[in-house]
Length: 306
Ligand code: HEC
Ligand code: HEC
Image 1: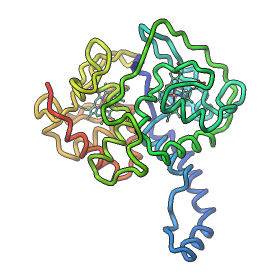
Image 2: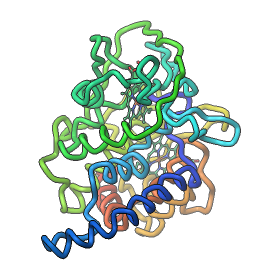
Image 3: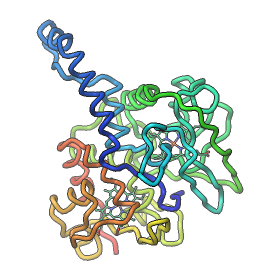
Image 4: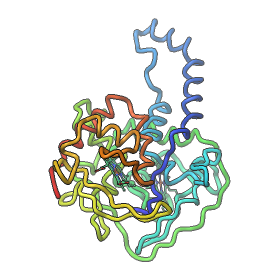
């Protein structure tokens, strides 16, 4: 279900506006927050659902990579989430990232929160037509609070009118789910680093690429983290790396810092800059230190495989 390497892309600069806005909002609400903290003894900077949703979308889930139009200068955040630019062509279907702005006619402005939640976790639209490519099988694991937070955040973007070319479904398609990720992980995001890392890496759908067999198709049991699928795109061709804990073929011999550098700067242990499919993942540089550590802790538990 991976497209021509066009899935997932975010450049560092893309979030400047968001973080700026967030800061402004934070400062505006500062007196109230401080007051509340004095009154009720709650932390002054507890996250609102929209702030939590912003973090998940911008640092982990990267809806932009598939839903925000991409021009020569990268993602066009002035038309954020309006779709149509990323094309995913597979033998079973050809689809484009949808317009998920709150525009009522061409986006999802007429959908209820329950409609959006159902699409995100079951891949089913209100009109009964299932979606292809959209990584809903990776979102079944979301805690109820995180799911609500992402829905709340998507509704804060500006409505953009943009009619996206309709999908073309050619034959049956379905998505496998990673074992243990088929239902909400619990009411709260786990504090245990390995479980937390598994949660975050699932939302970041690392295994959409890294568990894809050379000939296509994902295998989340026998092929977890083994890579080997060749991705092609405007960047040329690149083989997805083995990220199992195998010491020679995988990343078992890498230090924590090596792994963090790969995730946040798009640079390999050998010093090479990654090609687009992985280079675009530098939005992980927005992860909190705790979440980045958790991601590393979970990566270390992937059984070695050549
Ligand atoms: C790997 C690419 C990819 C990512 C990441 C992704 N989507 Fe999608 N999404 C798609 C594609 C492609 C479609 C349209 C599929 C089709 O038409 O069958 C879609 C469809 C949707 C739809 C249905 C819209 C409609 O009009 O039917 C919604 C809602 C949606 N995505 C929300 C999100 C949100 C929110 C996120 C981030 C949390 C996200 N998507 C992340 C690729 C992606
Ligand atoms: C869109 C597909 C895609 C996604 C999603 C993705 N990767 Fe990658 N990853 C790649 C490709 C392709 C490479 C090889 C890049 C290159 O060699 O230029 C790579 C390389 C890597 C490397 C470097 C390994 C080495 O031997 O140099 C690490 C580590 C890695 N990925 C971890 C992750 C983790 C962890 C996630 C999720 C948090 C993730 N990737 C998500 C496609 C992806």
